[in-house]
Image (cartoon, rainbow, N blue to C red; front, side):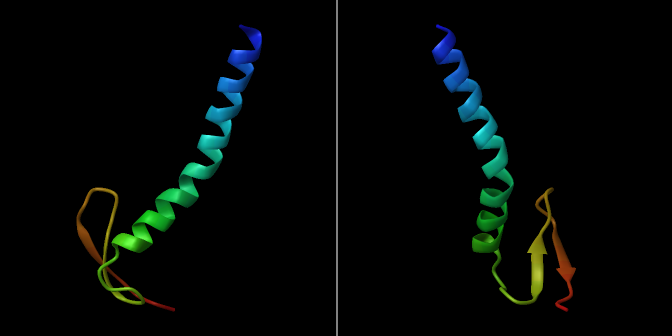
Amino acid sequence: MRKALTFLMTVVVFGLLIAPFTALAWQEAQDPFPGGGYMKDTLGRYDEWKTL
C-alpha cells in the first residue's frame, strides 16, 4: 500500500513538473500565425503580440 502511494505521488509530482512545458508546446502548435500575428490567451481571446 505504501509503495503504491509513493509511486502515485511521484507520478503526480512529475506530472506537475512537465505540465507547463506540455502546455507551452501545445499552445505553440495551436498558434495559427507562428512568429507573429495573433495568439490565443488563456481565456480563448485573440490578443495581438509583438515579436522581439
